Length: 243
Image (cartoon, rainbow, N blue to C red; front, side, top):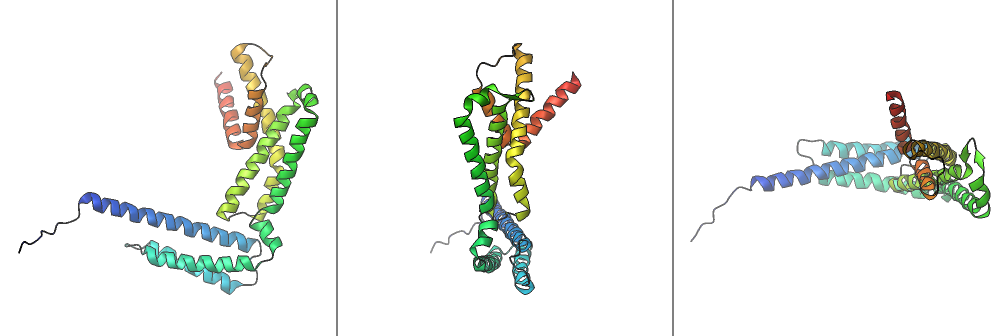
């Protein structure tokens, strides 16, 4: 009878298994953090008001799951079970709330309706008053720069609302930010126009921009990504200081 030689797993196999375990731990740690953030935001919005015992029960499951993952040999299976218990308990309380509460804090309904209304006003203004907007200026900036920047701000609101409702971490205190987004986008659109014109004059030596389509896109991008617009402004400031 021939005996089969038992060999130790290769180093590569052990490394792959270790990597998979690490990825699982990181994934479930992230899921637990998101669940805790959802719980805290819901509690902030009155989800578990006067229900301290139920709140603590969910927190205890999350804390226990974190302990399972932080051991020398993480117990992912046990952590997943406790995550499921906490998730189910939280969902039970969310589903018990009336539709008006879920409309505000789960679906972001008021912000969505507001952004849709602003978008409709912008599109109708562009359709009906396009010639006036193209020819009129406000503080040496064409009116359409404000309009397209505002549209970019609206789409930034759509993107942010979709992301936060998907992650279930929408907070009621953010509504004021959603309200201000079109205004902030309009101002950034105007600023982007001024930056573009300054660069265009410096590069070409002309003051007349023949094609406005790219500038409109530039203004909309500035409204959509306020961080990008601020970075552009910061780089311009550094160039001016160097000069």
